[in-house]
Amino acid sequence: METKLRSNPVTRGKSRARTSLTSPDALVSASLVPPERREDAERVARRYAIAVTPAMASLIDPGNGEDPIARQFLPDPSELDISAAESADPIGDDAHSPVEGLVHRYPDRVLIKLVSVCPVYCRFCFRRETVGKKGEALLSASAFEAARAYVAARPAIWEVIFSGGDPLILSPRRLRSAVEAFGPISHVNVMRWHTRVPVVAPERITPALIRALKSAGKAIYVALHANHPRELTPQARAACARLIDAGIPMLSQTVLLKGVNDDEETLASLMRAFVAARIKPYYLHHLDRAPGTAHFAVAIERGQELMRALRGQVSGLCLPSYVLDIPGGHGKSPIGPTYLETDGDGQSRATRRAIRDFRGRFHPIGGACR
Image 1 (cartoon, rainbow, N blue to C red):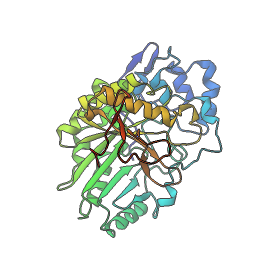
Image 2: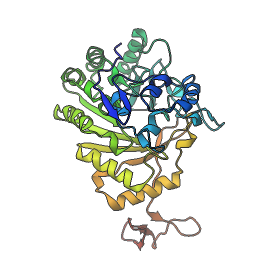
Image 3: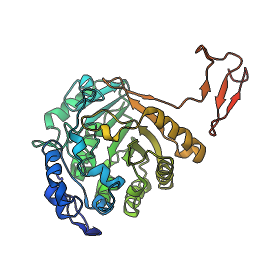
């Protein structure tokens, strides 16, 4: 498996990275972590993987202690503060994994973890206990074949989602092998790829990689994970354009994160940037309770406030669904906000229902809407 990233020199202040930074020493040498914080970073690195690509290193302002890019990728000692409410498998993948590497949570789709490594490691990752570990990074040939056979034997499976880790870290040859394995299954109509690569390593989105993803007669989608508008650099937008211009639609996924995007201006800017890049906002995820992530948590009520504010500011094209992955493996559910009001005893207003507009004002709708 190919994991080395090609890169260009990048600078911001004193920081300079020509290759991915994967250790506390490398982060200190690049002036992204001050020497006095080296020991803290080493403590985190003993438990969780670290990787910052040149593209992301170039965006970090080492002089800003609240930099939203740094917050996503640089180790923080708060990651070692783990509560009883947190879980190594917060969305219950294991409970829905009938064969190794495959998650079958919903009737018509499965998720396959092709690889357990990423070009960057997010400090809030819900799979942080399983990605970036030493050992075999690629799903074994036997496990991959078992996953393919599982899908082939179940006509109800309409969509296959490739994830990991980040599957687009793989070579075009390996990506092509996955597409060719599932492409001939007649009831699989959609193949979707979940990735950060177009943003964190845009140089990897080559013509060869794009060709590898395509499959005659199948709908291919790429879902991009990005959390802050600064991530959508000219290079990232160009990488996305290469995919879209080749006929591969793109969707976005964003995690609501304290100190990164938990304000109206940042979220609105991010969603507009997606749409301007021809990427449809798809999900705004409420943070999953992975170990050591409490410092990123935003209250659901605040998330709902932000969604109400977005509806008042941006085009409907820019609105994602705000969702919670229910702990224990029960799947995603939209968590609002709701705009219909009920009366004091909790019963729906049969003739006096009211709906809230984007300014927060209520309007009676009576029996006009049934």
